Length: 200
Length: 177
Image 1 (cartoon, rainbow over the protein chains, first blue to last red):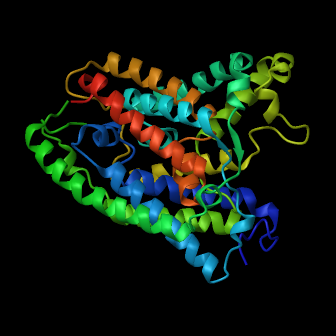
Image 2: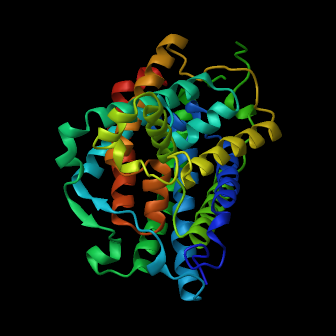
């Protein structure tokens, strides 16, 4: 019964081998979906290419629904999986800064690694930026240490906070995603008529 | 640059297929390891490691970096570093398969110079690096894996990243369209 490594079914010594293998599949899917190009990624913000929205939201709803089925069938103990902790205001601020970085830089961290792999200089420079950014964050840490640790709600899920069952959230996200896929395909058709074809 | 090569000629997999496979990968990752995918954590490990080599005392005294130093192993010996190494090789594999591995080049909007694109790529990277520390992860670790496991923080990060992206997009439209 999963999760396999925390439950000792796969010995912890295999951790890094599994990390590389899962990473390879992750990188392959990002690149094969077109995420190695900043032009494709930025398209989601300007309406000429919604590939990010399609891949990302499909992945979220498939994973949400799948994990619920794994739980229902008794294949995984959801109580044993890692739940990202919630630090309310720092995460909102962090997300806003990341969104700004996404629009300006045209990548996010995982996608920039695949960009470097196929020879994108802008991806390499973006990754150097990540390194500098995290270093600067560390240097200035005493200035915002209190803010960084503020709003700690613990490792809570949507269900913990609202009392609404997880399956309702999965259903709601699925409906929103399907509506977004349909709506954005109409926007994309309109915008693509007005935009110059983009080159590599 | 050959202007006749358009995006339409790059061969990508169907985005919904890519999304389904990525979703299954998240499930498999959680099923095996009990946690999700990530990316920014690997860069953080690289920062802490190099900083510790160059300035060991200052790094150990740094209130943030010292959190990630342990006596029994280097910060490079962590799950996310190996996974990110995999991401690079997986990207390379896909690039080779689809014929996209070529000499170093720059993607940019039609209205800006290469130099401007690289300056903005650097600034964007710096911002993303800073934001991912406040956000406890980036698009992969917080937004994707966090939301997939119904974590409140993951959903918040996802809406904050994309919401902010749409708000700021208007100001930086010259970079891309």
